[in-house]
Image (cartoon, rainbow, N blue to C red; front, top):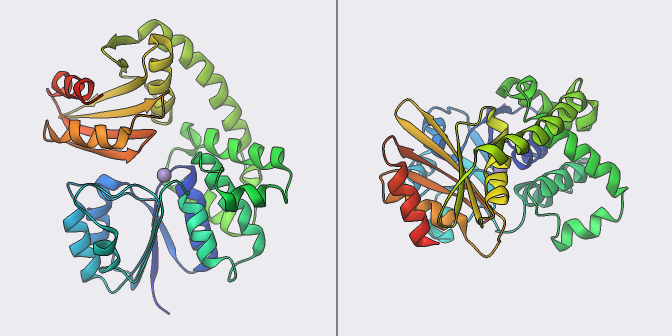
Length: 316
Ligand SMILES: [Mn+2]
């Protein structure tokens, strides 16, 4: 039997897309990765076939990743992130067996549509959860199918998933792998022991977080920012609240550790293309950045934060 590995993102869309991939390839092993680790994880994967879902190509590694993809025999790649500058869809397509790429559609919808006739039809729920989690539930495909089910129940399920995985109890890759397996088998997020309780704790923490950010956030130019907010899953909310409380269009949450700085970027104004801004500002200080137009991130070297923020402001 061929050995199959699924490499997916550890957020809601990634978990849902991974669960659809696992419904299709039930013998596969599931691992989580992210754009900055994809190259390394690909190099270390020895499977005969690799399914990649919801992982962007970042500009720094894109060419090495494509070279590695070409070296591997069989790669199926489902993603919805914008391609980095200088990389074309045709180039990616030429190095993989299957490439399904479309922006403004969740990775979960993309992979579900590919396999819909081969997996149980209820897996559409997983696709809908991924789409809602990704703020991509306004596509014609998802909108039409939302009508078939009780929308409120689906939103409850996806809220349990998104908020639950923000807590320590579901922070590990092992616990997220358990969620992927449960959802691949046809169970729902609320069937996962402890997830609903964790989600309700996360909601309470998020209200507390807002109060804290109100006291801590500062503003420079068009950017509201906060530093060193603990709890990994809350960085996106922290960045957004930093924008909200400083009345800035853009908010960032800064996490400094050892010799690198992780920056999470969110906006309240969807006219900005945060992925492009993150990419350019990070590169100006020898870091790397990217993501989605409305939710992006960057990793930059220690000591470059002021220059990074200045560059962001000039790009804005
Ligand atoms: Mn994702």
